[in-house]
Length: 347
Image: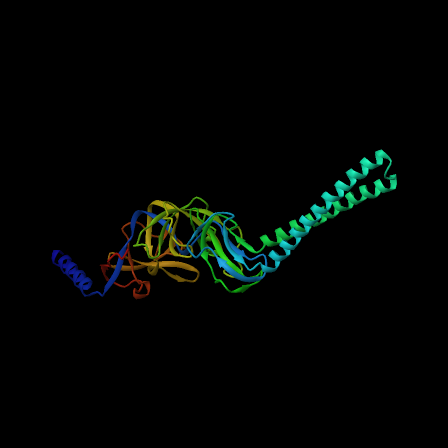
């Protein structure tokens, strides 16, 4: 009997050594973060386009792209020759009318004095008084027209609507513009944000307050911490996604709007999670399964996992820590004898 047992053992060893090799991964229990990866862009908190309020030729631009500006600061000037001439004409008319009114008031004062001495009739006095009223009314009308002309002249001055930085200046001096021509684009000088579009299939898991790692392009692989500050309540029909905005902790002030950022949002953290490469999972008849190797035999095992857009997924049932799972489920045949070879961990 001892000889038979030894022979059987040798036969089993021989069968295993001759069995085909199968790349496997060992299921491990570990702490893991479920992360959503996306690509976003840096955006300013506020972004304003500046247009001319009057059509004409640009005669001067005081600022260029990258310059800081203060709210109300003059950015440029549209040719205002005609409205300036109109203002000068109205100003002269006001000055002339004031002289006329001064003379009418002197005439009224003299008429009142002569009326008391009986040298002027009551009708003559009333005529002088009415002349003063007419001149006062005319002065008011001319003053209003002058104020309107001055206000019109202001329309030819381009001012900054807010404090910030010039992001874009698509117009040069000498160019003729109208009220639909963008002269500048200004972004707020405050802390920038990152905006990304998350597919509707996974956007429901994103919540305000979730932490994220942000890696802006071209910044020497520097990574910043961030936090979700906004999740759009609606899905954008054109993209099928929801807008998500994130703050950037300790972001450099010179980070330019529009810069691409690799975004990794931590959706969930688990201790003792069982994970597998997505490629180790196959589907059939509406269920998911893996090929588990136990005692060198391949066993098909149905599993349940959290379907998430990542290379590794969290398995919630069907396998246990220490199980060896075929890296490619289609390369293993259920019931066959194999020689499991641990594949290198590429994480």
